[in-house]
Length: 177
Image (cartoon, rainbow, N blue to C red; front, side, top):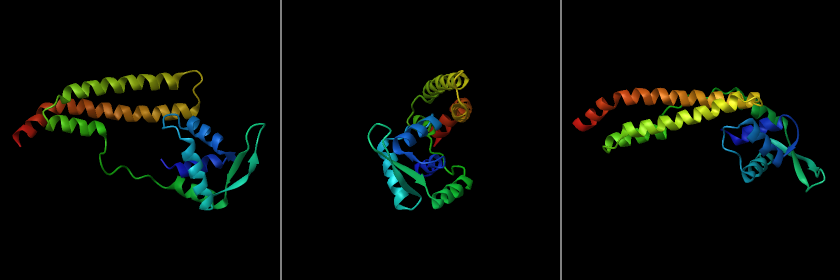
């Protein structure tokens, strides 16, 4: 995920300071890793340096003085271009679950036990996400984020089920090699 573009997207709604951008990021992307304040301010400085955002004054709201940032026309154009780019599907499998199963098979480990444990962890996370998205106070962003995560977890579960059914054959192939 491009922090640069996410912050430009959040600035599209009007001038904001770093604290509000961090808070809004964490609200709008609830299943993503929360942004660190340092990351927000470093990214904002780069956006200003690159002419994609600019300082729009300061605001104190009765507290410490905060710098307000706003997107520039160049920032709006870059955001529109980024948002319209089709994201290519991942060309390679770089999933830790896949790697652990392969290593367990190669090292005569217990791939079946690992898959069973991982399946239980996935099911627990799916129950958590389902509870989050069906809560009475769930907003649209939360529901969309939970649905996205649930779809990926479901795909992992289908792969784990297929792999568990093939473990005898896979282990025999490794042993024969």
